[in-house]
Amino acid sequence: QSEATGETKEFLFKILVVGDIGTGKTSIIKRYVHNIFSYFYRSTIGVDFALKVLQWEQNIVVRVQLWDIAGQERFGNMTRVYYKDAVGAMVVFDVTRTSTFEAVSKWKSDIDSKVRLPGDAMIPVVLLANKCDLSKDGLVRNAAQMDKYCEEKGFIGWFETSAKENVNIDKACRALVAKILEND
Ligand code: GTP
Ligand code: MG
Image (cartoon, rainbow, N blue to C red; front, side, top):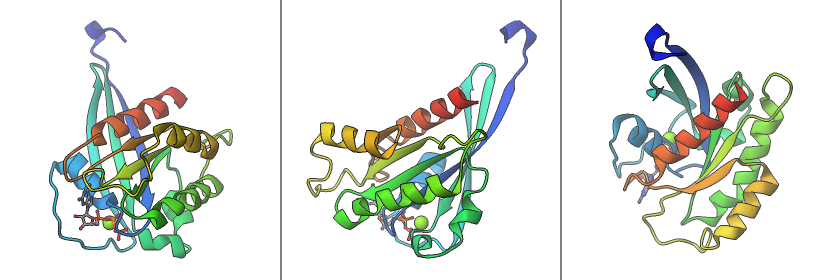
């Protein structure tokens, strides 16, 4: 659309944020939406919501509805309900805890088995290696290996993030939204 017509296109995207307990999902969302961070840990119960409005282009507004799903839901049966109608997702792990990385493929399969785009394509998913401000567990030292892992598991990409230091969070969300818009 040309500027002259002034017609704005608006999109509403439901995006899931999943990953094991304490990996920083809520912190990433709080940083992204409110630009705040706290060391205080209060585990999410069930699901929380947040909205971020992006002026994507001059004539495109994207409302990103973030579904902050409790890590403990991996052991429950509610995820099918939470995932309904999502068009994208972020899987978060904690670079200081190997077990949270091992859970990544479980979260990815959970998403792929429970939510699809019209036409049955998988929804785009990014992988976030969070708490990169802390010393790493050797998990993401090898970028080429991470690239290969993402390709194998069907992630659109991965980012080292820090909710604390505000690293790469905007970038990761932008990459995801760009991919969703491509599908649209
Ligand atoms: P659940 O809701 O239980 O699934 O956890 P969560 O994934 O929402 O984790 P949350 O955001 O509550 O963060 C857990 C703890 O990790 C908190 O104490 C946060 O302050 C801390 N944390 C989160 N992100 C970062 C980060 O990037 N760096 C550091 N150093 N700490 C972080
Ligand atoms: Mg939480």
